[in-house]
Length: 179
Image (cartoon, rainbow, N blue to C red; front, side, top):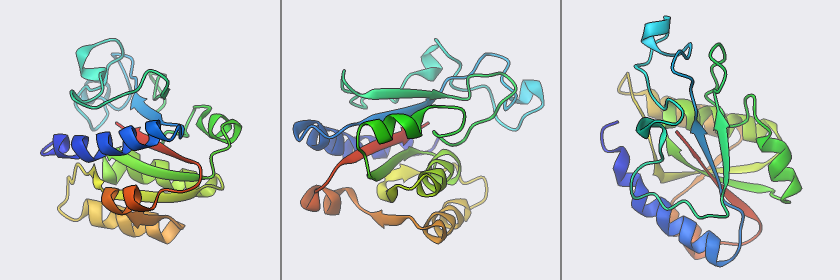
């Protein structure tokens, strides 16, 4: 994804801050079998990506993933697509057990995983904010990310920036970095 690496530094700043104040940190990731339904070779729309246990499934180089972070794998079944970190996972249950009320969403891609995770988080009863300088879209169409933001805000999510968040942290929070 073009310029996807540009969001790593501000995400790392949030991870460092959240870790320092002992807030829970959660990363989501695609964890596809090699014959996943979303792949072009299987009739899907995407090139093969995030195939479990391969270098392509690793988090972005340079992204700081603390040892105590929760990792949620999604889209693990070959016939089940999951753009949201909540689809087919126990993410909601885990967050509730951690006492999380507020979510700050970061990662890739604004117009797919970020959008769907955000909307599902709102539906799940969380107060949700998308960190605008910590997301990046695929933008198959030039306006896809803008459309995704309208959908997320329309569903009840707020937006913030990493700098604003770092200045005003309070309450229990988590970061979800969709891939």
